[in-house]
Amino acid sequence: MAAAVGRKAPAFRLPAADGKEVALADFAGRTVVLYFYPKDNTSGCTREACDFRDAHARIVRRGAVVLGVSPDSVRSHAGFREKHDLPFPLLSDADHEAARAYGVWVKKSLYGREYMGVERATFVIGPDGVVRAAFRKVKVAGHVDEVLAALAD
Image (tube, rainbow, N blue to C red; front, side, top):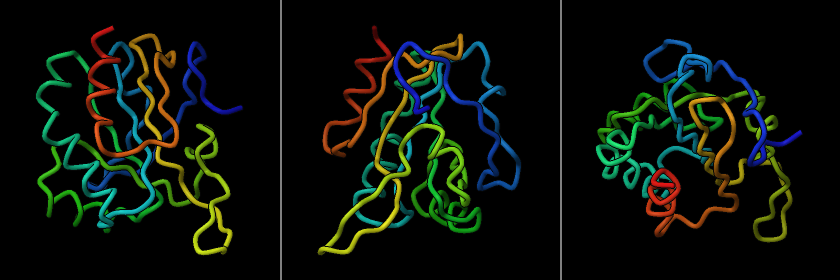
């Protein structure tokens, strides 16, 4: 079942760009901003990552941590993170297990061709592990402000 507001967030353990494994359980007692994005180094995903980077201090002041997740490799994430000076972990979901658990591994269409891919989405997970806010089919412009507003609630 996909992640939904008011429900326990699906657990995961994924490799990070620094080679360590990161699990949702590592952040028990903290608010987590978990964002799924399709691909490193594409225009929309780069803008989204940089928006989270630029708002990172405000997010941290609100007691939250940011985790980015995409199907890209750890190596790709390491380069993307370094290139854009991202202060938060990027996690590799190469087998799409976390994306499926959160309901964001979906059928997409581009120029009439259908394929499976990650739907851009963000989940705010409370210190108790329950999803407090879910943003699906995210439009990058203004999204971080929506997340900041959800953290203020």
